[in-house]
Length: 174
Image (cartoon, rainbow, N blue to C red; front, side, top):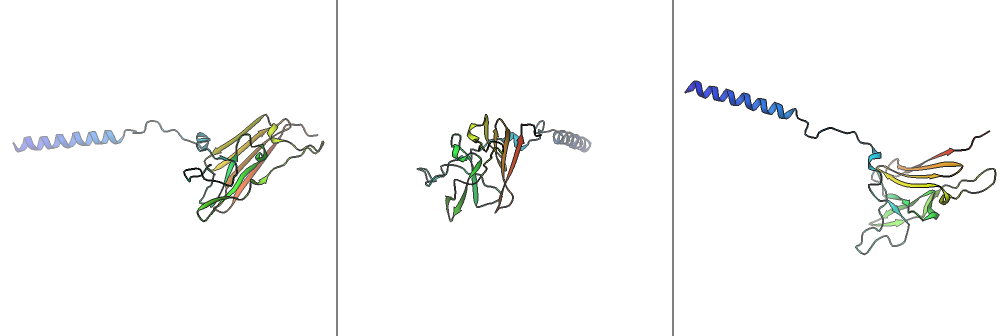
């Protein structure tokens, strides 16, 4: 009887160890895919048009601005069709005590002029206009006949936002 009990205990221990070891080696998540911020384009709608009344009938914000790094200010992407805002990031919106306040339509807005003709480029006439939100940045792209324009807004700290501007000339320079 004593021998039989030891044998059962040994078999139980071996089986339990084998099963636990086998289950520990299983990949419970399947294959792991590395993700990038490009996988999360426009997950949030951060387009807005500055207005005085920022709350709706439920006392929540009409639009969702983009803020990062604990900043108490935020920006929007322009809404499609709000051509007066093209070339700039809408805002800034600040938190004044508990209520949001728009300080400006666009505090900084790019204006591009053709040096040969003196013509100011109208960004609303671009062939392809894109306003995109990625985690951590706002991006505007404009494709015009003479050049491509890309604007990116990121928060560098909780008190400063930076705008990176890329202009790709399509014409051959002599």
